[in-house]
Length: 109
Image 1 (tube, rainbow, N blue to C red):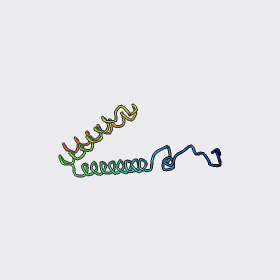
Image 2: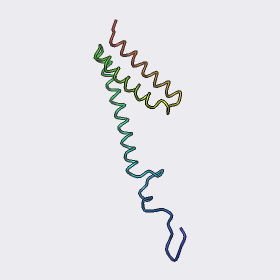
Image 3: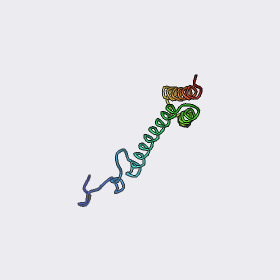
Image 4: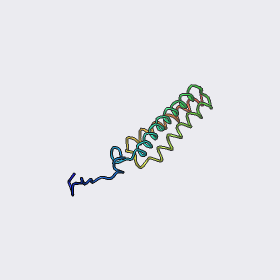
């Protein structure tokens, strides 16, 4: 800060004081935190539905597992361009594993 006619000169505005780390406003930080919580809740719900599908078995269980596989495949396709090769391969492997699991549960020996 420099003195100009007895008054300190500030280079930031009042709006800058409301910003958090990395220039995000508190509202933006709250939205990001909500998105993280929603993502975690969605993952837990998908895992619960897949486990329920495995436990139930038969066509109903297979349908539940396939719903989870379809959801993962949808997010894979929508984020394909932003994923690295390893991330793509892991997600494709998970989708294929879920489809195979659904087939095994739908068509028992």
